[in-house]
Image (cartoon, rainbow, N blue to C red; front, top):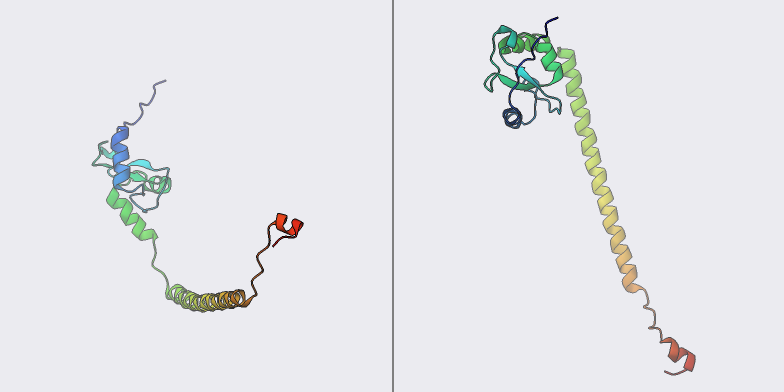
Length: 149
C-alpha cells in the first residue's frame, strides 16, 4: 500500500505574515476566523505552486466551496449564488430601517428625559442638604462624663 505524500505548506513565519497582511480574515468572504486554511488561489491539483504569491487565508466554508476552482471561477460562482434582492425584500428592509430610526429617536428622547429627571433630583437633594440644620459638634466622652465644658 503506497502512502500519499502530504501537500507542502508554507513555513510558519511566512503563513503568519500572510495572516497579518489579511488581518486574519478570509480572502473570499472577509469573515474573521481563528481557523483559517492555507488556500491555493490556483489549485494545487491544477499545477498551482505552494508559495506566498499563490496562498491566501480562507475559512473552512469558503475553502470547501471553492474546491478545485481557480480564484476567478470561484468568484464567478459566488456572484451567481448571491442573487439580488427582490423588490418586496427591498421594501421590507426599508420599512425595518424606518422603524429602527423611529425607535432610536424615541430612545434618544427617553434618555434625555431620564437625564433631566436625574439632574432635577440631584438639585433637590443638594438644596435639602444645604437647608438641613447641621448637628452640633459632639463633646469628647471625658468631658461628658466629668461634666466639664
